[in-house]
Length: 70
Length: 219
Image (spheres, rainbow over the protein chains, first blue to last red):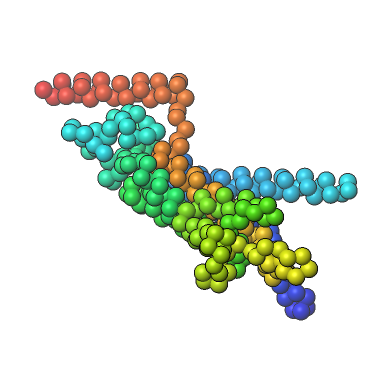
């Protein structure tokens, strides 16, 4: 493995990763507004995280597909 | 809040108007009935104000500790991480024609942690004094063409992190609005459909009849 290339790759700003803390924070807050008990809150949070990620991926796919038309 | 016979009052229940004996309460502020929690919101207006001032504080006041810590951690970590990414410059209040910082209205949702920006703006624009703590949360200098453009300098220094920090702090402020509403009105729980509720009520009636029957047989 070429370590120079590897470190050059991880050194690049991966903006996508910055969405993860936002998804986690949003899911937890959203889940906490749905119930009072910890287990249902976490259940709602996981579902919200999955749906948010799917939504973002769909938007990404649409934008990526659209970019081919430009 | 409970009355003399130990029932949660209708006014305080918020999202459910059924009365529940306090004997089944799992904590001083919470009870569970038919699988749905019921919450004592104490003083909802005060709780909402506290929730705005410091994320999670309203829930701690209402003794809803788990949710209070969840809100506090999720919102404040997001806010301060965003502020850190932008070097403390992403939260500032500027209402001049050249730079209307509309993002600040979203960031203001986080309450006290965003208020120093207003103090800095007041000092700089009203009192014509230098900002406190260096440029922390201070508005950028007015642009002097070909000489001074501090906002552009911040963008140049922090690259994409200036935008990311702005986004993080805005999201934190907007999330706290959800928390404020939750402190004021209680959690949003889907009410069961009318048919399901009728079914549940019917089941409860049957259980009550069976219990009465058993007690009668015993006596």
